[in-house]
Image 1 (cartoon, one colour):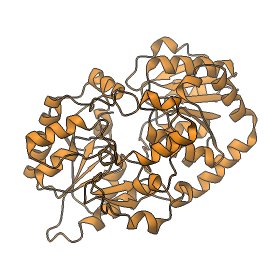
Image 2 (cartoon, rainbow, N blue to C red):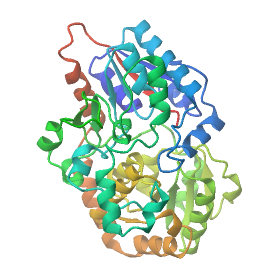
Image 3 (tube, helix red, strand yellow):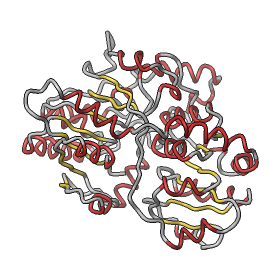
Image 4 (cartoon, rainbow, N blue to C red):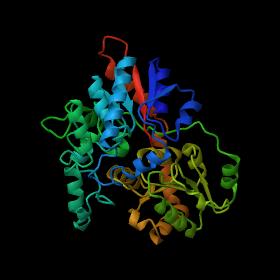
Length: 422
């Protein structure tokens, strides 16, 4: 959201910023961004619970927010939009905007679908899940799992019930499917055709014709990679750690259970690598010995990944695209369907190894790390992918897509960026 904010401002677009709060408000302050907090503040503990409830991690019978929270945030966001004369809201993963924009009568642009969009699963391109959302799926053959994954997004209502209860209370359009939960009026597809495998004209011509699983106004636009390039220094402590001889693995499992991070770090150490760990909202201080393992709450990944032998990530688009832009091989441990796709795309490019969480806690992780360090082909393919994506300015493309979407409006619009709590 910071990158999109800056690109919109550079294009002369008035922008205002609102957030639910969270541990990283200081990043907005550091960037000189003026912002408004809406609703109850998402403190560190609430953000940790939010992460535990995310799709693919938390139960599909819940909606990440309580009903009261959802109503409070949606009303506060809608009132903010009305007061500021907002004409379009932009979000990363603040899903209450699916309701507040309808309440305020403005369109929504979002990047949180990443590449997990209808033309992909309508073409049958989603892989079988490494961690099925519905446990019974794991007993089915992989081929059938894959077909169900590609068939179900617009037909399943997992995670949607709370949103639809709130929508009924607010008197606005609901969320008809899990697919619709991840889409917006203007969906920013933060990938490139060469990697995703869907031609630009096919993706951008897609419309939700004759299907009740989508909101009828949904559109898609390619923007190219969109990931954080935080203007944070690399501390002397971290710099010294990276300068020592021997391979380092950057472990950034930021949306995973802390127990998984502990097990992965142990497996990385078994492979003969030191580990630099991004903790974010987790308390992982017990891992830090300053010699073999170093833990920091927040790291500028785009400055770290260029200096390590490999990255270990859950497979969110931000971390995968940062690895691609830096030309670093990666181990992906997907926790949810969107991450399965991202890791699959990186594997298809020859720069990654994907492991189910159940396999990432022991010898399979150790073996994957050794392969990435010892076999030059992974680094070579990662550098080839870097040559594809490094020339693309995804933030500027996103800003251009937003401005183009608003062109028919008679008055000069204001864009809003609502920052994700995680």
